[in-house]
Amino acid sequence: MTSAILPTYARADVAFEKGEGAWLVSRRGERYLDFGAGIAVNAVGHSHPHVVGALVEQAQKLWHTSNLFQVPEGERLAQRLVDNTFADYVFFSNSGAEANEGAIKMARRYHYVNGNPERFRVLTFEGAFHGRTIATIAAGGQKKYLEGFGPKAEGFDQVPFGDHEAMRAAVGPETAAILIEPIQGEGGIRSVPHQCLRGLRALCDEAGILLIYDEVQTGVGRTGKLFAHEWAGPEARPDIMSVAKGIGGGFPMGAILCTEEAGKGLAPGTHGTTFGGNALAMAVGNAVLDVVLADGFLENVRRTGLFLKQRLAELRDRHPAVLEEIRGEGLMIGLRSKVPNGDLVAAMRDEKLIGIAAGDNVVRLLPPLIVGEAEAAEAVRRIDAACTAIERKLAGETDTPAAAVAGAR
Ligand SMILES: *Cc1c(COP(=O)(O)O)cnc(C)c1O
Image (cartoon, rainbow, N blue to C red; front, top):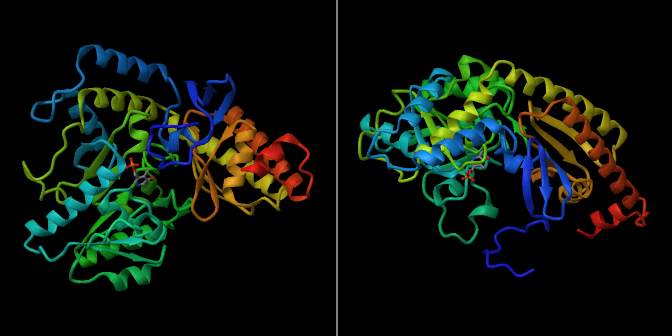
């Protein structure tokens, strides 16, 4: 098929026409169980009536006025985020990378107004993913994203994942902040131990630098807490946090949350965005939060996540040639594969189940947070069938259509 879209993605040959809860219907009329949720974006599932209602209602009134004016829906959303987190202030953006850019600028500016402009360097963990802008590819530090795009932006240093002593040794007189994902998403569902998060908080306090969490993928209920760092307790709270993906439930939006102290450098005129926080995005963001903050919602994420992990652990025992390890928190689960992870994703897709490849040969399961045991059990059945198809192929029995297709990809 020819396409006028710049081919920066190797797309699967499926287009979806309609979504309902955890299900997607393709243009050919096939029903897929969506355990990718648009890469952890459709937090409340597809076509959630409350969110659709809020969008339609706002769309008929007002879409956008710019940040030169008051945006009451934004005031309300910011206040609710503040009431439910460590933060005192919120800045709304349009994407995860843009939220991280703002977080990095905020940290540098904090030291600048403190009279320490030499403090501009940001420390990150190897394997991190913080976005695709010039600064955020430097923050991630991964060669595959940096290659060919000119010199790596100055001021970003990587240390080995989870290595507290290496992080401590890397802090110097030019360090402004530590920026990490509490659980690496694109990196392959790699959790930073809670003790390490608390240790990083203490290290930042000791060194007078800022702790930034990138909760673009882990946030808004994904792990069974509103934000993943909450699992490590108040001793792991950040100064700044970036959020995106799930916060808009599919509407493009992001946010930077910060303490009053960390945000003090960003006075009027120092940072901005044309689209960020517009009335349409804010109406949707409030509606998503209504759902996620409702009684029992996060409890369901934790319960369903545990159920899914237990059932997947049984599957791993039954399919040792395909599945190596099950890991993650809540509904952010990684299947470390023994076969190339792209083959497992393809075999799952043949069973009409969507999962997403990540680093470390992992397949991510990131279902909408509204799923229950029935959908989780159905996903496990389909992964079981996908594993069986792969095993047949490994055994040389390529005569079953599913295995043949998986093998061809
Ligand atoms: C997806 C992601 C980003 C980038 O978000 P975009 O909206 O694609 O710019 C940044 N950080 C993490 C942890 C992510 O998962």
